[in-house]
Length: 289
Length: 133
Image (cartoon, rainbow over the protein chains, first blue to last red):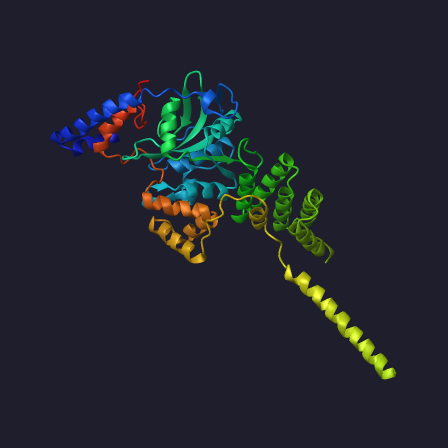
């Protein structure tokens, strides 16, 4: 597709660019001597030397659809029959010929999945090692000539110095760590974990997961929210907010007895919270009347 | 005496009726369940604080999204799915034009530069380049 542009410019106009390229080349060689990615100094956590997530399908993207395609790949990995067109209807902005970061998050939620951001190598590699694919926002080009792109990281190998991505454009994309880091840094280290609601991230703050669960409620995905609150309550049994959310999500679906059970659990964890007592009283009143 | 007794009784009735009404009013006040969202932002540390958009600002953002070719009803639904901080990030991206798209649309002037930078492992645009390490 890129070759089409070759005819647009007469050859003599190349003189300028070539000179600039020569300059860049010299600069480039100097900078290319940067040391390779060293997991011992760069990571704050221990992750395996190599890891790969199995079963992430490769989908060839339609024009400009790398965002929707990335989400479709992750959702199909999770067993959902979601196409890139389904996602695009909820996320793509035709005028921008692209997909905004926030719409990536919003559309995943509206499709009933947990969506939380990740922004460090610690998080990225821990999630991959735990078997979770991670969507990353990259600038594959340069700051002055940006080429924005979403890809799905599916694996890495420190020994071979390689990061593996399903990119929607080609088949599997393989990058050395240093190159991957450059492209990801230009995308401000924006990463997105999209998981089914019965699966929790391994290295994301509890509050972020809670907020993601509440966001599912907000978009009307109460069933998914309920499942996520249940999963969270099992993982973090000391936090009353999980059974509290669970109670509210069950109440929203008309499950009064289930809501009462969950709210009682929340009250048992912390009997002093007025919100828990108020909602429990509310549910008990409805059950009595 | 009888008269006084009657008023005492009357006062008692009025007072107890008032008490009943008052407690009734309190329970009526919470006609809805208290939301999880509000409880999280009250009790759990929240990174989104400081980003508070009012209704009018959200309308502006919605107009900006519609200007990107999105159906108005769909734009409203997209906004409803987002926190204020996330909405703010859309505004930033509309301004700096950084929506994720792909290599389609790259101009030839930058083609050569990117080809070289690809080979130098700075960028990764073309699938036929091999990065020199």
